[in-house]
Length: 198
Image (cartoon, rainbow, N blue to C red; front, side, top):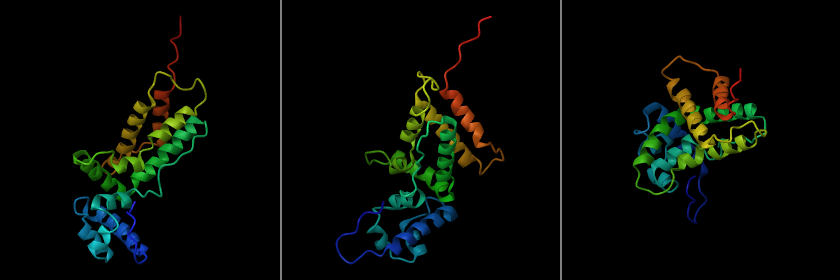
């Protein structure tokens, strides 16, 4: 989120909105590398110094623009595993499916892999719904989940499926219903029935 302004005159919140909107447009039109603080300032019609008073760098600004903290992935578990997984997958796809988010995600991940700053990148903290996935699995009826399966492994596979759907659907015509993804996740989570004896 934008850093709080120091004591002084009230902050013009319209600058925040214009900067975030400009960043989203630039990400889609020009790409991650070309979405610089100067380019955002010019598109928003503000001075670059106004942006630096709100965000330490373009990375934080892009994160705020592409992955708004006000719109996290939130799916409260109900105990109906299939229904909860369907809602979870739809919510996750909605976040990553936004055009600016698709462009920003790869650039942000590459930046954080090479960054010398300690700690988890905020894009993970913003968008990662791993704890919610665990909560959905934990809320499933007793006996419906294989106790030997690590939910984190299943989440990693699900995340890969979601990224494939979001990123590769721009270059392929292979459209797969979400229900098929739900079925695959359920197969991974459910206990394997014992073999039938002759």
